[in-house]
Length: 242
Image (cartoon, rainbow, N blue to C red; front, side, top):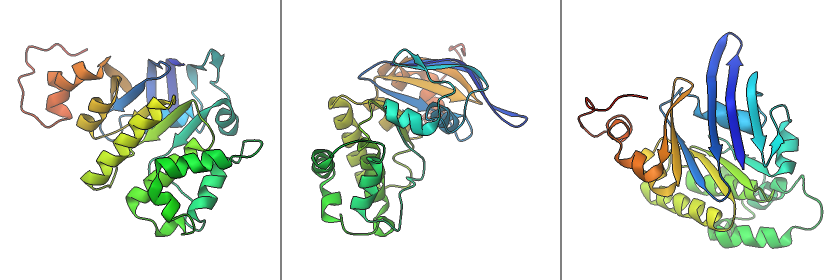
């Protein structure tokens, strides 16, 4: 579904992505792992058209989208839930969801009902201002708003950030449901344990480069991942870095 080839992104004289290559297959959940500053959010912003790659290529469903604008990518079937949620705090829950369907033509009442089925708490809060919701409810609203555009690929940036463990579990269950409904998911997440238990495959980023790529189950037991991202004390002396 998505193929990134030798993508380079620069901010002025600073190179944020150093020729990264990876792919996402239809129906998968793929996770990008890495510390702050590794380039994960920049990767998602590149894929959603907020930062164009200066070099390399991005293909979505066989089409070159390297230079396609963000609003056009939304119409093509890519939705981005950014870090920090970025809901409209002075709009109601229902108005926020309406904004997710802005690029669509025709009625979308069925999709609104579907969002309320996926996030029952949002139906209870539908007339409340988005800014008055809890952090978990705002995250649900941000995901629901993105789904209102009927994406085939959804990009999630740190969906568990700042949330209580019980809410994190709920968010990850919802992400699995989204995939089961046919939406492919690319998720950036610092909670490596949760992300790898959810995902089919994963990529580990360091300093704007992809340094590990494997099935999620294998990454979960990889000594380097366990030592650096899961906080475990393991012997990595016999493992040769890639």
